Amino acid sequence: MNFNPIETNTWVPLTIQEEGETLINFVQATDEFVIDSFGNSWIDAIASWWTMIFGHRHPKLVLALEKQLKELDHIMLAGHIHPPAESLSKVLLELTNSEFHKVFYSDNGSNAIEIALKLSVQFYQNHPDYKPRSEFLVFSNSYHGDSIGAMNVSGKNYFNRIYSELRFPTKEFPAPNCMFCPWGKSANSCHTECLSDLELAIKQKEYVGIVIEPLVFGANGMLFYDKKVLVKLRELATATNTLLIFDEVFTGMGRLGEFFAYQKAGVKPDLLVMAKGLTGGMLPLGATLVSKFIYEQFLSKDPYKAFFHAHTMTGNPLACSVGYASVKLLKETGLGLVKKLEASLQKRIEPFQKTLGNRIKNVRVMGGIFAFEFQETIAEDEYLNPVGRRIREKMKEYRVLIRPLGRTIYITPPYTISENSLDQIFLGLEQTLLSFAESD
Ligand SMILES: Cc1ncc(COP(=O)(O)O)c(C=O)c1O
Image (cartoon, rainbow, N blue to C red; front, top):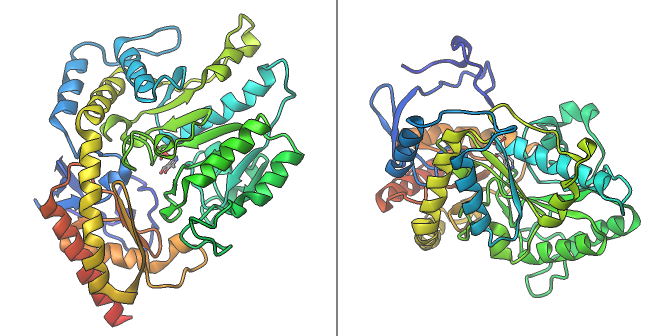
């Protein structure tokens, strides 16, 4: 059975209540497929909001969960520790080449960001050589989550402008965008002109930190930018003793072809935030990794210097054991799978462009991301552009689940997706967009 949003007891997120959208009722899932209550099989082409990096119910993750369920389901982490949290922390610190010192758990990406923000503010409070700071440097096309703090450091947009009165101070700069460089620069001629205003600001005033999604602004349009930007930000942050916070909730866990985007860029942040693919999408978990010099400012007997932040389900043993199994998979086979996926996506660019011609723009691939814009015009409040919704609906005829960001259409499939399923997705996209172009 499928439902109308107003008939369900559940308030389904990001759903316009009276729009008349039919909710598909999913009851099963395996690999890249989800099965609805009528028995129809659908392809989860965006890996359920970028989480299911190894597909649904991967046997190794299921096994890890079953094993852990027989041992310890939950224990509050405050004042306690347990093997799954320790094993996962160890493997995360290894994955990041011991460049971070501690792992602080939470249960989603927004909370992991909140923790990074609070730790950063308290770092300056605790540090004997610094005055307290409270303002963050942020970017216009960024998205860091829907909780108040995470929303505050995201770019101001239609989602969060309603809550502008709740904002704590941030200074926002246009997001670097190497796809449509406003300075008309190419990779060779670029001298990070897009950061000149930020450079001026950071030299004039003390800020807590710079918060950025490294290499790709995901939720606000799959905008790719060059690592030069991150190199420059690192240089500016170091020169001004400002913390550099990378939000790898999307770009981490192999999505861009390396374990983390910061490794792909060769630029180390001071705090690293992850969630989504951390448990292969099976259970909610977030983690904030902290550099040693930050942790050292919390090494004190003084309770006022302790970090008093916890979520009830912080470091849940089930989530951590699945996380551990997923990270192990990522280490063993994950990157190879992403590279294979990337090559397959790259190969599809040319025929896709040939079929769709100038109906599509900026076809791009990075790791396990394939994105493009449908037609040229970018509307104000782009996410709400109805074309995205219409394309999503039409793709249902091909049993493919996508969630366009306005005119930006993308797929971020599980790394394990088969070529057959990719063929089905691309056939669906081509047919859908051809039919749109004809009727537009
Ligand atoms: C880059 C980034 N940061 C943070 C978040 C928030 O994560 P969550 O939805 O788990 O709170 C998201 C979610 O899409 C994200 O893309």
